[in-house]
Image (cartoon, rainbow, N blue to C red; front, side):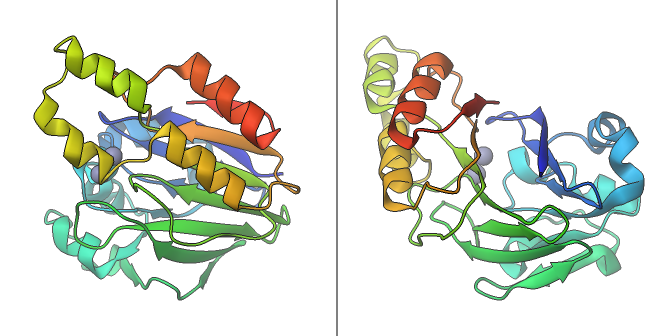
Length: 236
Ligand SMILES: [Zn+2]
Ligand SMILES: [Zn+2]
């Protein structure tokens, strides 16, 4: 089974690790490198690399730091263009949307996501050691593809429209942020549609990630996704 760990999730930083018993992939490097290095200390001898979805700080601020400590980075050309401080070019591995690649015990397929940055992607990740398929999708307002035979889903569930409207009405966030949010992040209602569009029969667990501090409710999100998907849900 693929084991999923999380050091940080949300707009202040994202850092996850997936472990299939043979090797480990880091997903995102959106917290200081020091924290990533100490947080996954026991996993480090088995880290095959770090996959990064896009250049925003909450996903990439620790990328240069972990590269300096010997971790190979995988991202699209556009994403690397947006991360200017990596001074170890040989640690950069450019991935292309729709082209799968192998990384120790994993096969990884980058797919297109919809976000306000250079060249964002999500990752469909198969573990040959665990024989499980994991979907990693964050910072996208929808997902154009559907996927077969998923076992683990890690998906952004940023906001729900009623809570967002309430936050605006109560002045917690300015109205002017709403259009950007709707066109760049995954809301509860859209996550539900996405899960309904995919075959859930083989899914073992769903992890909800990147919840907004102002515009989400972890307990409600967990219940609603559990009801729609009929699978156990963990909220990070
Ligand atoms: Zn983000
Ligand atoms: Zn972003």
